[in-house]
Length: 312
Ligand SMILES: NC(=O)c1ccc[n+]([C@@H]2O[C@H](COP(=O)([O-])OP(=O)(O)OC[C@H]3O[C@@H](n4cnc5c(N)ncnc54)[C@H](OP(=O)(O)O)[C@@H]3O)[C@@H](O)[C@H]2O)c1
Image (tube, rainbow, N blue to C red):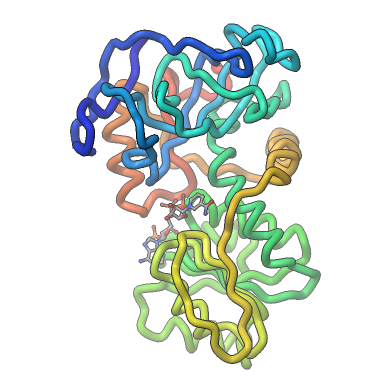
């Protein structure tokens, strides 16, 4: 099968499109024919300790089941699924076929194209978990840092749907976009006055903040009121101050059920998934480099077609 692989241990720039054997599945796994792949900043470096090279990268995709292991009894060949695969020695999902543990699979609603489904597992999981950890109630005010990307696009809409009032940061070209998603106030993280602009919007500070991009945690602390809450998505280490409660996002088992629900909301048109670009599989490395700039709007995907509707 074709796969985009890291060719040598420790050489993260040795990515290439190669022909490698399809993975063998264990009893509790299924073989998925991959139809669309979600690209993330983690893809170049998420790898098991004992990887065999060349190693197919990637952790997030959607496709159809080709074959099931003996103990994988809940799915059948032809079923449409999305998933985040474990980082396993037999390789990731940037390939024609991927071996995936049955417990990681989430069914895709019939009317959700593979391309939209593949955009959901990682960013959707992180957004859902963030929203749950924030504990948003109607009228709560939330600042989101770095919010026009894959996670922020979903987090703004989910917060708004729970009755929250959102202020969000991104560069100025993305302000109309974030307002269209439901943000009430937008600021540019490059503007030295952005903290005071959030405080003009919410004197005394916002109730809570979500630090999505790495390095945004400190700024979030500056805009949160005494006794508020900061949730960090990218592992920023913060020291507590002014009674502010600080937690880090960790994706839990509960999120799988919520992701299935999110897929239904997307299929019904109630939640928008923004797709900056669908690259053909052969241009995966270019797609990864674009994602690594951290300036994509919404999500970047790989597929053999850029016509999502054709790939049902
Ligand atoms: N904990 C978890 O479970 C989990 C799961 C998934 C991802 N993550 C992490 O979450 C982070 C965000 O993921 P994502 O997929 O949403 O990223 P993304 O799509 O690349 O996010 C891009 C967004 O970040 C903004 N941005 C870029 N540089 C910034 C800066 N210096 N300060 C503030 N905002 C900035 C961009 O704005 P402009 O384009 O307008 O400049 C855009 O809004 C990544 O670091 C990822 O590794 C964590």
